[in-house]
Length: 432
Length: 152
Image 1 (cartoon, helix red, strand yellow):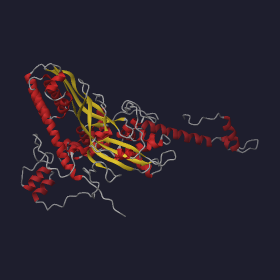
Image 2: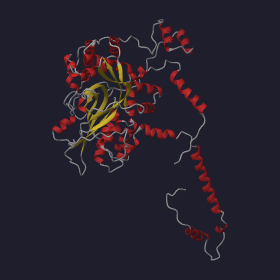
Image 3: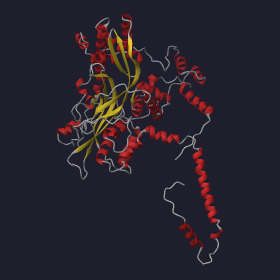
Image 4: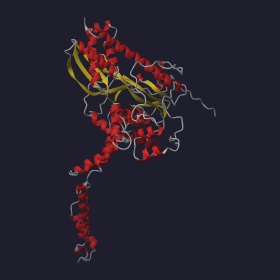
Protein backbone atom coordinates (compact mmCIF):
# COMPACT_ATOMS: atom_id res chain seq x y z
CA UNK A 1 0.00 0.00 0.00
CA UNK A 2 1.32 3.41 -0.86
CA UNK A 3 1.11 6.33 1.52
CA UNK A 4 0.69 10.02 0.89
CA UNK A 5 1.97 12.63 3.28
CA UNK A 6 -0.28 15.13 5.00
CA UNK A 7 0.69 18.39 6.59
CA UNK A 8 -0.79 21.19 8.63
CA UNK A 9 -2.46 21.19 12.02
CA UNK A 10 0.65 22.39 13.86
CA UNK A 11 -1.27 24.66 16.23
CA UNK A 12 -3.74 21.95 17.11
CA UNK A 13 -0.92 19.47 17.67
CA UNK A 14 0.86 21.87 20.03
CA UNK A 15 -2.38 22.54 21.89
CA UNK A 16 -3.04 18.83 22.24
CA UNK A 17 0.45 18.25 23.60
CA UNK A 18 -0.10 21.06 26.08
CA UNK A 19 -3.15 19.26 27.43
CA UNK A 20 -1.09 16.15 28.01
CA UNK A 21 1.62 18.14 29.79
CA UNK A 22 -1.02 19.69 32.03
CA UNK A 23 -2.11 16.29 33.26
CA UNK A 24 1.46 15.18 33.66
CA UNK A 25 2.95 18.18 35.35
CA UNK A 26 0.16 20.18 36.86
CA UNK A 27 -3.07 18.99 38.43
CA UNK A 28 -4.18 19.18 42.04
CA UNK A 29 -1.66 16.73 43.51
CA UNK A 30 2.13 17.09 43.59
CA UNK A 31 3.93 15.86 40.53
CA UNK A 32 5.07 12.28 40.82
CA UNK A 33 8.78 12.14 41.58
CA UNK A 34 11.03 10.01 39.40
CA UNK A 35 12.49 8.52 42.57
CA UNK A 36 9.00 7.53 43.68
CA UNK A 37 8.32 5.76 40.41
CA UNK A 38 11.68 4.02 40.53
CA UNK A 39 11.30 2.93 44.13
CA UNK A 40 7.58 2.13 44.36
CA UNK A 41 6.66 0.99 40.87
CA UNK A 42 9.54 -1.44 40.47
CA UNK A 43 7.68 -4.05 38.46
CA UNK A 44 6.56 -1.48 35.92
CA UNK A 45 10.07 -0.02 35.73
CA UNK A 46 11.51 -3.52 35.27
CA UNK A 47 9.06 -4.27 32.50
CA UNK A 48 9.88 -1.07 30.66
CA UNK A 49 13.60 -1.81 30.86
CA UNK A 50 13.08 -5.35 29.65
CA UNK A 51 10.98 -4.37 26.67
CA UNK A 52 13.27 -1.49 25.81
CA UNK A 53 16.30 -3.75 26.10
CA UNK A 54 18.17 -1.34 28.34
CA UNK A 55 19.02 -1.52 32.03
CA UNK A 56 18.58 2.07 33.22
CA UNK A 57 16.15 2.24 36.17
CA UNK A 58 16.20 5.99 36.60
CA UNK A 59 15.58 6.64 32.90
CA UNK A 60 12.89 3.96 32.78
CA UNK A 61 11.11 5.63 35.70
CA UNK A 62 11.41 8.96 33.92
CA UNK A 63 9.99 7.44 30.74
CA UNK A 64 7.14 5.85 32.65
CA UNK A 65 6.22 9.17 34.21
CA UNK A 66 6.43 10.94 30.89
CA UNK A 67 4.26 8.28 29.27
CA UNK A 68 1.65 8.63 32.01
CA UNK A 69 2.05 4.99 32.94
CA UNK A 70 1.77 3.66 29.39
CA UNK A 71 4.30 0.80 29.46
CA UNK A 72 4.64 0.40 25.71
CA UNK A 73 5.08 4.12 25.21
CA UNK A 74 7.66 4.23 28.01
CA UNK A 75 9.55 1.34 26.42
CA UNK A 76 9.45 3.23 23.14
CA UNK A 77 10.94 6.32 24.77
CA UNK A 78 13.69 4.33 26.43
CA UNK A 79 14.52 2.33 23.31
CA UNK A 80 14.68 5.51 21.27
CA UNK A 81 17.06 6.98 23.85
CA UNK A 82 19.21 3.87 23.74
CA UNK A 83 19.51 4.16 19.99
CA UNK A 84 21.27 7.50 20.48
CA UNK A 85 23.97 6.08 22.74
CA UNK A 86 27.11 4.34 21.54
CA UNK A 87 28.28 0.98 22.76
CA UNK A 88 31.30 1.72 24.91
CA UNK A 89 32.74 -1.71 25.53
CA UNK A 90 32.61 -5.27 24.36
CA UNK A 91 30.61 -7.73 26.36
CA UNK A 92 32.46 -10.04 28.70
CA UNK A 93 30.21 -13.05 29.05
CA UNK A 94 28.78 -13.87 32.44
CA UNK A 95 27.53 -17.32 33.35
CA UNK A 96 23.93 -17.75 34.43
CA UNK A 97 25.37 -19.77 37.32
CA UNK A 98 26.65 -16.48 38.75
CA UNK A 99 23.12 -15.33 39.43
CA UNK A 100 22.82 -14.31 43.08
CA UNK A 101 19.30 -15.15 44.13
CA UNK A 102 16.76 -12.83 45.68
CA UNK A 103 14.05 -15.40 45.12
CA UNK A 104 14.11 -18.98 43.98
CA UNK A 105 11.38 -21.56 43.74
CA UNK A 106 11.55 -25.05 42.25
CA UNK A 107 8.00 -26.15 41.48
CA UNK A 108 9.19 -29.52 40.18
CA UNK A 109 11.02 -30.60 43.31
CA UNK A 110 10.14 -30.31 46.95
CA UNK A 111 13.67 -30.50 48.29
CA UNK A 112 16.07 -29.31 45.61
CA UNK A 113 19.73 -28.65 46.03
CA UNK A 114 19.83 -25.32 47.82
CA UNK A 115 16.99 -23.32 49.30
CA UNK A 116 13.52 -22.57 48.04
CA UNK A 117 13.31 -18.91 48.83
CA UNK A 118 10.04 -17.05 48.36
CA UNK A 119 11.67 -13.64 48.46
CA UNK A 120 9.30 -10.74 47.87
CA UNK A 121 6.10 -12.23 46.53
CA UNK A 122 2.34 -12.25 46.94
CA UNK A 123 2.03 -15.62 45.21
CA UNK A 124 0.61 -17.41 48.24
CA UNK A 125 -1.66 -14.80 49.78
CA UNK A 126 -5.06 -13.49 48.87
CA UNK A 127 -5.14 -10.50 46.58
CA UNK A 128 -7.79 -8.00 47.36
CA UNK A 129 -7.87 -4.34 46.61
CA UNK A 130 -6.63 -2.53 49.67
CA UNK A 131 -9.12 0.22 50.29
CA UNK A 132 -8.38 2.58 53.17
CA UNK A 133 -10.63 2.36 56.18
CA UNK A 134 -13.23 5.12 56.24
CA UNK A 135 -11.87 8.16 58.03
CA UNK A 136 -13.66 9.84 60.87
CA UNK A 137 -15.67 12.81 59.78
CA UNK A 138 -13.39 15.73 59.07
CA UNK A 139 -13.86 19.09 60.57
CA UNK A 140 -15.07 22.08 58.69
CA UNK A 141 -11.63 23.54 58.07
CA UNK A 142 -10.38 20.46 56.25
CA UNK A 143 -13.50 20.13 54.20
CA UNK A 144 -13.26 23.78 53.28
CA UNK A 145 -9.59 23.45 52.38
CA UNK A 146 -10.25 20.40 50.27
CA UNK A 147 -13.14 22.10 48.57
CA UNK A 148 -10.91 25.00 47.66
CA UNK A 149 -8.41 22.70 46.08
CA UNK A 150 -5.69 22.97 48.73
CA UNK A 151 -2.79 20.58 48.41
CA UNK A 152 -2.85 17.35 50.33
CA UNK A 153 -0.05 18.60 52.57
CA UNK A 154 -1.96 21.74 53.43
CA UNK A 155 -5.11 19.78 54.10
CA UNK A 156 -3.19 17.38 56.32
CA UNK A 157 -1.60 20.27 58.20
CA UNK A 158 -4.99 21.82 58.75
CA UNK A 159 -6.44 18.53 59.89
CA UNK A 160 -3.67 17.74 62.37
CA UNK A 161 -2.82 21.25 63.40
CA UNK A 162 0.80 20.44 62.58
CA UNK A 163 2.43 22.59 59.94
CA UNK A 164 5.42 20.24 59.82
CA UNK A 165 3.46 17.47 58.13
CA UNK A 166 5.60 16.73 55.10
CA UNK A 167 4.44 16.98 51.58
CA UNK A 168 3.75 13.61 50.01
CA UNK A 169 6.49 14.22 47.49
CA UNK A 170 9.17 14.65 50.14
CA UNK A 171 10.72 11.92 52.27
CA UNK A 172 9.39 11.87 55.82
CA UNK A 173 12.83 11.49 57.34
CA UNK A 174 16.18 12.70 56.09
CA UNK A 175 18.23 10.14 54.25
CA UNK A 176 21.46 9.37 56.02
CA UNK A 177 24.55 8.95 53.91
CA UNK A 178 26.95 7.59 56.50
CA UNK A 179 28.28 4.10 57.08
CA UNK A 180 25.51 1.52 56.94
CA UNK A 181 24.22 0.12 60.18
CA UNK A 182 25.18 -3.48 60.84
CA UNK A 183 22.43 -5.87 59.84
CA UNK A 184 20.04 -7.26 62.40
CA UNK A 185 20.65 -10.79 63.59
CA UNK A 186 19.78 -13.34 60.96
CA UNK A 187 16.48 -15.04 61.58
CA UNK A 188 16.95 -17.76 58.99
CA UNK A 189 19.40 -20.58 58.77
CA UNK A 190 20.87 -19.71 55.38
CA UNK A 191 24.43 -18.70 54.85
CA UNK A 192 25.65 -16.41 52.10
CA UNK A 193 27.04 -19.18 49.85
CA UNK A 194 23.46 -20.42 49.37
CA UNK A 195 22.78 -17.48 47.11
CA UNK A 196 24.08 -19.38 44.09
CA UNK A 197 22.46 -22.80 44.45
CA UNK A 198 22.91 -25.55 41.90
CA UNK A 199 20.15 -25.70 39.36
CA UNK A 200 17.63 -28.50 38.94
CA UNK A 201 18.93 -29.16 35.45
CA UNK A 202 22.19 -30.36 37.01
CA UNK A 203 20.23 -32.84 39.09
CA UNK A 204 18.40 -34.18 36.04
CA UNK A 205 21.66 -34.47 34.17
CA UNK A 206 23.21 -36.30 37.11
CA UNK A 207 20.41 -38.85 36.91
CA UNK A 208 20.76 -39.15 33.16
CA UNK A 209 17.23 -37.87 32.69
CA UNK A 210 17.88 -34.79 30.54
CA UNK A 211 18.79 -34.49 26.90
CA UNK A 212 22.30 -33.12 26.75
CA UNK A 213 22.33 -30.40 24.10
CA UNK A 214 25.45 -28.64 25.33
CA UNK A 215 27.60 -27.42 22.49
CA UNK A 216 31.32 -27.89 22.20
CA UNK A 217 31.79 -24.89 19.93
CA UNK A 218 31.13 -21.35 21.05
CA UNK A 219 29.42 -19.35 18.32
CA UNK A 220 29.27 -15.57 18.60
CA UNK A 221 25.89 -14.50 19.95
CA UNK A 222 23.55 -13.01 17.38
CA UNK A 223 23.15 -9.27 17.81
CA UNK A 224 19.53 -8.47 17.10
CA UNK A 225 20.28 -4.74 17.17
CA UNK A 226 22.60 -5.01 14.19
CA UNK A 227 21.35 -7.96 12.20
CA UNK A 228 17.87 -8.68 10.85
CA UNK A 229 15.82 -11.26 12.68
CA UNK A 230 14.05 -13.67 10.37
CA UNK A 231 13.07 -17.35 10.63
CA UNK A 232 16.12 -19.54 10.48
CA UNK A 233 18.26 -17.38 12.77
CA UNK A 234 20.28 -19.10 15.49
CA UNK A 235 18.79 -19.80 18.90
CA UNK A 236 20.74 -16.92 20.45
CA UNK A 237 18.72 -14.54 18.25
CA UNK A 238 15.47 -16.12 19.38
CA UNK A 239 16.45 -15.78 23.02
CA UNK A 240 17.47 -12.13 22.55
CA UNK A 241 14.24 -11.38 20.72
CA UNK A 242 12.11 -12.92 23.43
CA UNK A 243 14.08 -11.19 26.18
CA UNK A 244 13.05 -7.85 24.61
CA UNK A 245 9.55 -8.91 23.60
CA UNK A 246 6.40 -7.31 24.90
CA UNK A 247 5.33 -9.31 27.93
CA UNK A 248 1.67 -9.54 26.96
CA UNK A 249 2.51 -10.67 23.44
CA UNK A 250 4.77 -13.43 24.72
CA UNK A 251 2.23 -14.60 27.28
CA UNK A 252 -0.53 -14.51 24.68
CA UNK A 253 1.51 -16.53 22.22
CA UNK A 254 2.21 -19.11 24.90
CA UNK A 255 -1.42 -19.27 25.98
CA UNK A 256 -2.76 -19.46 22.45
CA UNK A 257 -0.52 -22.45 21.91
CA UNK A 258 -1.45 -24.21 25.12
CA UNK A 259 -5.21 -23.68 25.03
CA UNK A 260 -5.87 -22.07 21.68
CA UNK A 261 -5.91 -23.20 18.08
CA UNK A 262 -2.18 -23.59 17.43
CA UNK A 263 -1.24 -26.23 19.97
CA UNK A 264 2.49 -26.28 19.37
CA UNK A 265 3.28 -25.95 23.06
CA UNK A 266 2.63 -28.52 25.74
CA UNK A 267 2.09 -27.76 29.36
CA UNK A 268 5.38 -28.09 31.14
CA UNK A 269 6.79 -28.24 34.66
CA UNK A 270 8.94 -25.41 35.89
CA UNK A 271 12.34 -26.44 37.14
CA UNK A 272 13.70 -23.14 38.33
CA UNK A 273 12.14 -19.72 38.78
CA UNK A 274 14.76 -17.29 39.99
CA UNK A 275 14.97 -13.58 40.50
CA UNK A 276 18.42 -12.27 41.30
CA UNK A 277 21.45 -10.30 40.30
CA UNK A 278 23.93 -10.93 37.55
CA UNK A 279 27.27 -9.12 37.44
CA UNK A 280 28.06 -6.74 34.58
CA UNK A 281 31.57 -7.37 33.42
CA UNK A 282 33.75 -5.41 31.01
CA UNK A 283 37.35 -5.60 29.95
CA UNK A 284 39.77 -3.27 31.69
CA UNK A 285 41.37 -1.19 28.93
CA UNK A 286 44.82 -1.22 30.55
CA UNK A 287 45.17 -4.76 31.85
CA UNK A 288 42.76 -6.48 29.49
CA UNK A 289 41.34 -8.42 32.41
CA UNK A 290 37.64 -8.46 33.32
CA UNK A 291 36.18 -5.95 35.75
CA UNK A 292 32.77 -6.16 37.39
CA UNK A 293 31.27 -2.68 37.31
CA UNK A 294 28.02 -3.56 39.05
CA UNK A 295 25.03 -5.83 38.74
CA UNK A 296 21.58 -5.94 37.18
CA UNK A 297 18.54 -7.84 38.30
CA UNK A 298 17.12 -10.54 36.05
CA UNK A 299 14.48 -13.26 36.12
CA UNK A 300 15.50 -16.74 35.05
CA UNK A 301 13.33 -19.78 34.34
CA UNK A 302 13.97 -23.39 33.36
CA UNK A 303 10.99 -25.20 31.85
CA UNK A 304 11.10 -28.99 31.85
CA UNK A 305 9.24 -30.82 29.13
CA UNK A 306 8.59 -34.55 28.99
CA UNK A 307 9.52 -35.76 25.52
CA UNK A 308 6.83 -37.88 23.89
CA UNK A 309 7.19 -37.41 20.15
CA UNK A 310 7.69 -40.31 17.78
CA UNK A 311 11.20 -39.13 16.91
CA UNK A 312 12.16 -38.16 20.47
CA UNK A 313 13.81 -40.09 23.30
CA UNK A 314 10.70 -40.61 25.42
CA UNK A 315 12.67 -41.66 28.49
CA UNK A 316 14.21 -38.20 28.76
CA UNK A 317 13.23 -34.65 29.56
CA UNK A 318 14.31 -31.57 27.69
CA UNK A 319 14.57 -28.07 29.07
CA UNK A 320 13.69 -24.60 27.79
CA UNK A 321 15.32 -21.45 29.06
CA UNK A 322 14.10 -17.95 29.74
CA UNK A 323 15.93 -14.93 31.09
CA UNK A 324 14.92 -11.30 30.96
CA UNK A 325 15.75 -8.02 32.66
CA UNK A 326 14.22 -7.16 36.01
CA UNK A 327 11.58 -9.06 37.91
CA UNK A 328 9.13 -10.35 35.33
CA UNK A 329 8.25 -13.97 35.95
CA UNK A 330 5.36 -14.14 33.50
CA UNK A 331 7.67 -13.16 30.68
CA UNK A 332 10.50 -15.50 31.64
CA UNK A 333 8.13 -18.46 32.04
CA UNK A 334 6.54 -17.82 28.64
CA UNK A 335 10.00 -17.41 27.13
CA UNK A 336 11.25 -20.72 28.54
CA UNK A 337 8.14 -22.50 27.28
CA UNK A 338 8.52 -21.04 23.83
CA UNK A 339 12.23 -21.88 23.78
CA UNK A 340 11.65 -25.59 24.28
CA UNK A 341 8.63 -25.52 21.96
CA UNK A 342 10.77 -24.02 19.21
CA UNK A 343 13.42 -26.67 19.78
CA UNK A 344 10.89 -29.44 19.45
CA UNK A 345 9.11 -27.81 16.54
CA UNK A 346 12.25 -27.61 14.38
CA UNK A 347 10.64 -25.16 11.99
CA UNK A 348 7.72 -27.42 11.07
CA UNK A 349 5.11 -24.84 12.03
CA UNK A 350 4.81 -21.07 11.97
CA UNK A 351 5.78 -20.81 15.63
CA UNK A 352 9.24 -19.40 15.00
CA UNK A 353 7.83 -16.77 12.67
CA UNK A 354 5.27 -15.82 15.29
CA UNK A 355 7.92 -15.49 17.97
CA UNK A 356 10.34 -13.50 15.85
CA UNK A 357 7.95 -11.33 13.90
CA UNK A 358 4.99 -10.59 16.15
CA UNK A 359 6.12 -10.22 19.76
CA UNK A 360 8.01 -6.93 19.64
CA UNK A 361 5.86 -4.36 21.39
CA UNK A 362 7.21 -1.40 19.51
CA UNK A 363 6.70 -2.96 16.12
CA UNK A 364 3.16 -4.18 16.77
CA UNK A 365 2.04 -1.06 18.61
CA UNK A 366 3.74 1.19 16.10
CA UNK A 367 1.93 -0.44 13.23
CA UNK A 368 -1.35 -0.30 15.07
CA UNK A 369 -0.94 3.31 16.14
CA UNK A 370 -0.08 4.48 12.67
CA UNK A 371 -3.65 3.67 11.68
CA UNK A 372 -4.67 6.84 13.55
CA UNK A 373 -2.64 9.04 11.25
CA UNK A 374 -4.36 10.74 8.30
CA UNK A 375 -5.11 8.24 5.56
CA UNK A 376 -7.23 10.66 3.51
CA UNK A 377 -5.48 10.17 0.20
CA UNK A 378 -5.31 6.43 0.52
CA UNK A 379 -8.94 6.16 1.50
CA UNK A 380 -10.08 8.60 -1.18
CA UNK A 381 -8.42 6.49 -3.83
CA UNK A 382 -10.21 3.45 -2.42
CA UNK A 383 -13.52 5.28 -2.66
CA UNK A 384 -12.75 6.31 -6.21
CA UNK A 385 -12.01 2.74 -7.17
CA UNK A 386 -15.29 1.59 -5.62
CA UNK A 387 -17.22 4.28 -7.52
CA UNK A 388 -15.42 3.45 -10.74
CA UNK A 389 -16.24 -0.21 -10.30
CA UNK A 390 -19.85 0.66 -9.63
CA UNK A 391 -20.00 2.86 -12.74
CA UNK A 392 -18.43 0.14 -14.81
CA UNK A 393 -20.97 -2.36 -13.56
CA UNK A 394 -23.81 0.05 -14.32
CA UNK A 395 -22.48 0.68 -17.81
CA UNK A 396 -22.27 -3.06 -18.32
CA UNK A 397 -25.87 -3.48 -17.30
CA UNK A 398 -26.99 -0.67 -19.60
CA UNK A 399 -25.29 -2.02 -22.71
CA UNK A 400 -28.03 -2.15 -25.34
CA UNK A 401 -26.68 -5.31 -26.94
CA UNK A 402 -27.33 -7.21 -23.72
CA UNK A 403 -31.04 -6.53 -24.02
CA UNK A 404 -31.49 -7.35 -27.72
CA UNK A 405 -32.20 -10.81 -29.04
CA UNK A 406 -29.38 -11.89 -31.37
CA UNK A 407 -30.30 -12.63 -34.95
CA UNK A 408 -29.00 -16.15 -34.60
CA UNK A 409 -31.54 -16.82 -31.89
CA UNK A 410 -28.98 -17.33 -29.09
CA UNK A 411 -29.68 -15.81 -25.61
CA UNK A 412 -27.99 -12.56 -24.57
CA UNK A 413 -25.95 -14.29 -21.84
CA UNK A 414 -24.39 -16.59 -24.40
CA UNK A 415 -23.42 -13.65 -26.57
CA UNK A 416 -21.81 -11.94 -23.57
CA UNK A 417 -19.80 -15.06 -22.75
CA UNK A 418 -18.40 -15.07 -26.26
CA UNK A 419 -17.43 -11.43 -25.90
CA UNK A 420 -15.65 -12.20 -22.65
CA UNK A 421 -13.69 -14.99 -24.18
CA UNK A 422 -12.44 -12.60 -26.82
CA UNK A 423 -10.72 -10.54 -24.14
CA UNK A 424 -7.30 -11.78 -23.03
CA UNK A 425 -7.45 -13.10 -19.48
CA UNK A 426 -6.02 -10.96 -16.69
CA UNK A 427 -3.51 -12.66 -14.42
CA UNK A 428 -4.67 -13.13 -10.86
CA UNK A 429 -3.17 -10.58 -8.52
CA UNK A 430 -2.31 -8.12 -11.25
CA UNK A 431 -2.52 -4.49 -10.12
CA UNK A 432 -5.83 -2.82 -10.82
CA UNK B 1 58.26 0.61 39.35
CA UNK B 2 55.61 -0.54 36.90
CA UNK B 3 51.92 0.05 37.37
CA UNK B 4 51.04 -3.47 38.32
CA UNK B 5 53.60 -3.61 41.08
CA UNK B 6 52.48 -0.22 42.37
CA UNK B 7 49.00 -1.51 42.69
CA UNK B 8 50.15 -4.75 44.23
CA UNK B 9 52.19 -2.85 46.84
CA UNK B 10 49.00 -1.48 48.31
CA UNK B 11 47.16 -4.76 48.13
CA UNK B 12 44.37 -3.79 45.73
CA UNK B 13 44.60 -4.99 42.17
CA UNK B 14 43.77 -2.62 39.37
CA UNK B 15 40.59 -4.45 38.46
CA UNK B 16 39.46 -4.68 42.05
CA UNK B 17 40.02 -0.97 42.51
CA UNK B 18 38.06 -0.18 39.36
CA UNK B 19 35.26 -2.42 40.59
CA UNK B 20 35.07 -0.71 43.98
CA UNK B 21 35.33 2.80 42.54
CA UNK B 22 32.45 1.87 40.25
CA UNK B 23 30.36 1.14 43.32
CA UNK B 24 31.54 3.97 45.58
CA UNK B 25 28.94 6.45 46.78
CA UNK B 26 28.69 9.42 44.42
CA UNK B 27 29.33 12.06 47.05
CA UNK B 28 32.32 10.24 48.54
CA UNK B 29 34.18 9.68 45.29
CA UNK B 30 33.51 13.19 44.00
CA UNK B 31 34.71 14.77 47.22
CA UNK B 32 37.89 12.71 47.21
CA UNK B 33 38.58 13.44 43.53
CA UNK B 34 38.21 17.17 44.19
CA UNK B 35 40.96 16.93 46.79
CA UNK B 36 43.10 14.83 44.44
CA UNK B 37 42.79 17.56 41.80
CA UNK B 38 43.67 20.28 44.29
CA UNK B 39 46.89 18.46 45.11
CA UNK B 40 48.01 17.89 41.53
CA UNK B 41 46.82 20.35 38.90
CA UNK B 42 47.26 19.57 35.23
CA UNK B 43 44.91 16.64 34.97
CA UNK B 44 44.01 15.89 31.38
CA UNK B 45 40.92 14.22 29.98
CA UNK B 46 42.15 11.46 27.69
CA UNK B 47 38.76 10.40 26.35
CA UNK B 48 35.71 12.58 26.66
CA UNK B 49 33.46 11.18 29.38
CA UNK B 50 30.54 9.56 27.71
CA UNK B 51 27.27 7.82 28.45
CA UNK B 52 26.66 4.72 26.42
CA UNK B 53 25.89 1.05 26.73
CA UNK B 54 27.54 -2.31 27.16
CA UNK B 55 25.75 -5.49 26.15
CA UNK B 56 24.84 -7.98 28.84
CA UNK B 57 25.92 -11.29 27.39
CA UNK B 58 24.93 -14.42 29.30
CA UNK B 59 25.97 -18.03 28.85
CA UNK B 60 22.81 -20.03 29.44
CA UNK B 61 22.91 -23.51 31.00
CA UNK B 62 20.83 -25.64 28.64
CA UNK B 63 22.91 -25.51 25.45
CA UNK B 64 25.80 -23.60 27.02
CA UNK B 65 25.63 -20.90 24.40
CA UNK B 66 25.84 -17.15 24.75
CA UNK B 67 23.11 -14.65 24.01
CA UNK B 68 22.68 -10.92 24.51
CA UNK B 69 19.94 -10.25 27.04
CA UNK B 70 19.94 -6.45 26.75
CA UNK B 71 22.20 -3.46 27.05
CA UNK B 72 23.24 -1.75 30.26
CA UNK B 73 23.53 2.01 30.50
CA UNK B 74 27.03 2.99 31.65
CA UNK B 75 29.24 6.03 31.91
CA UNK B 76 32.92 5.84 31.01
CA UNK B 77 35.75 8.27 31.69
CA UNK B 78 39.48 8.24 31.13
CA UNK B 79 41.95 10.80 32.45
CA UNK B 80 45.66 11.37 32.83
CA UNK B 81 46.53 12.49 36.32
CA UNK B 82 49.87 12.53 38.11
CA UNK B 83 51.33 11.00 34.96
CA UNK B 84 49.12 7.93 35.24
CA UNK B 85 46.19 6.81 33.18
CA UNK B 86 43.00 6.59 35.20
CA UNK B 87 39.96 4.75 33.94
CA UNK B 88 36.47 4.25 35.29
CA UNK B 89 33.15 2.88 34.21
CA UNK B 90 30.01 3.06 36.32
CA UNK B 91 26.49 1.78 35.69
CA UNK B 92 24.02 4.55 34.94
CA UNK B 93 24.28 8.10 33.71
CA UNK B 94 26.69 9.86 36.07
CA UNK B 95 29.45 11.82 34.38
CA UNK B 96 30.61 13.54 37.54
CA UNK B 97 31.14 10.45 39.65
CA UNK B 98 32.71 8.54 36.79
CA UNK B 99 35.26 11.24 36.04
CA UNK B 100 35.93 11.41 39.77
CA UNK B 101 36.47 7.65 39.90
CA UNK B 102 38.93 7.86 37.00
CA UNK B 103 40.88 10.59 38.83
CA UNK B 104 40.95 8.50 41.99
CA UNK B 105 42.12 5.51 39.96
CA UNK B 106 45.05 7.48 38.58
CA UNK B 107 45.87 8.93 41.99
CA UNK B 108 46.03 5.44 43.47
CA UNK B 109 48.05 4.17 40.56
CA UNK B 110 50.63 6.90 41.06
CA UNK B 111 51.15 5.92 44.67
CA UNK B 112 51.40 9.63 45.52
CA UNK B 113 49.19 12.25 47.13
CA UNK B 114 45.95 10.78 48.39
CA UNK B 115 46.55 7.28 47.09
CA UNK B 116 46.07 5.86 50.56
CA UNK B 117 42.73 7.60 50.88
CA UNK B 118 41.60 6.15 47.59
CA UNK B 119 42.50 2.77 48.99
CA UNK B 120 40.52 3.56 52.13
CA UNK B 121 37.51 4.57 50.07
CA UNK B 122 37.70 1.29 48.18
CA UNK B 123 37.94 -0.71 51.38
CA UNK B 124 35.00 1.20 52.87
CA UNK B 125 32.99 0.52 49.73
CA UNK B 126 33.82 -3.16 50.00
CA UNK B 127 32.70 -3.20 53.63
CA UNK B 128 29.49 -1.39 52.73
CA UNK B 129 28.82 -3.95 50.03
CA UNK B 130 29.31 -6.81 52.46
CA UNK B 131 27.10 -5.22 55.09
CA UNK B 132 24.36 -4.56 52.55
CA UNK B 133 24.54 -8.14 51.31
CA UNK B 134 24.27 -9.47 54.86
CA UNK B 135 21.38 -7.15 55.63
CA UNK B 136 19.57 -8.18 52.49
CA UNK B 137 20.09 -11.84 53.24
CA UNK B 138 18.86 -11.35 56.77
CA UNK B 139 15.62 -10.03 55.27
CA UNK B 140 15.33 -12.82 52.74
CA UNK B 141 16.26 -15.79 54.90
CA UNK B 142 12.92 -15.94 56.77
CA UNK B 143 11.19 -16.51 53.43
CA UNK B 144 12.87 -19.87 52.96
CA UNK B 145 10.15 -22.46 52.57
CA UNK B 146 9.73 -26.21 52.52
CA UNK B 147 6.28 -27.15 51.32
CA UNK B 148 4.82 -30.37 52.63
CA UNK B 149 3.33 -33.03 50.44
CA UNK B 150 -0.21 -34.03 51.32
CA UNK B 151 -0.83 -37.76 51.32
CA UNK B 152 -3.98 -38.68 49.46
